[in-house]
Length: 345
Ligand code: ADP
Ligand code: MG
Image (tube, rainbow, N blue to C red; front, side):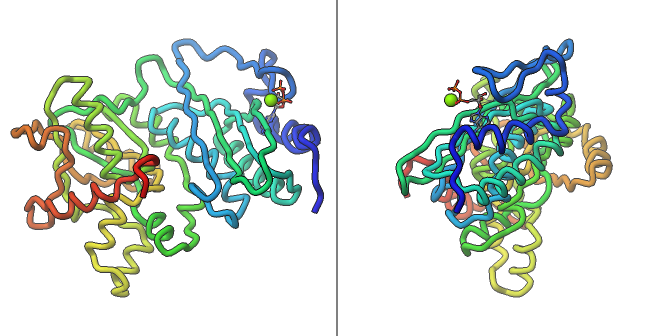
């Protein structure tokens, strides 16, 4: 297997490909890979930067034998999903890699997946770092991405208000179901960041988050941020029967390989969905339904934000079943499944 040096890698693999299809790097004030730092041209008037960073570690976030093109796609996609959740438009990103060796064929495929997504969203690779790590140590990839958003219009987690509808895009649960069966899944391997939706939700949604850790956990983050910011006692009243199950889960239920409740657990807190969950005032329902139609992206109303009447439900995500009854056992199971890197499982 061919083995390249770090400098071959940067010159032959990164520099030329990074500039292709990227208007940002054609700007006279910009400078991409090759110097001590990249230069980004001035933002359009009235715009501010949104910055995010996400890391994927071999054995923790992906399996060692994953398709490298899918991994290249995913390492950028998870960052673009964060930009989408802020309502930001991608501009540029850096890629840092810790690798125990440089494998020509593997990296070619990895970069093909990465650059295909970068071109699709006109997000330019402007720099990064490449370091050698001890042989046998897990590889790590870290991306930092920048996007632009009109000043004051970013979708924060902290804006939920009493009376808001809670919406989610697309379908939930198929990636987590695939992980549980150690199977490949198109959505698990190649999540599509909801960038158009994020931009369209500016001025419509009060708050948004991308569903990466699982709906229950991520909605909880948004709720707590909103309670802290406003000093209000809010809670989310969710209807588990409205959760949009992924097509693979739907089929598993139809074939009786899973019960409806098991399938709902994957959707309620599976993780790796990279859909947007957002809150918006009820008077925006028609606008949101039209958006779903125009963008060809399903948007489902799955609950409501209410004023918490008891201290016990403050900042809690409360699930009701089809009959409208509070399902405490279900909520407890979702809570237990919530992912925390340092909880030790
Ligand atoms: P320095 O020693 O100044 O950090 P490097 O030799 O690490 O410079 O990098 C040289 C150039 O290559 C820099 O412009 C850097 O941003 C870029 N670069 C290095 N690794 C990567 C990578 N993994 N992805 C994108 N650009 C990279
Ligand atoms: Mg360096």
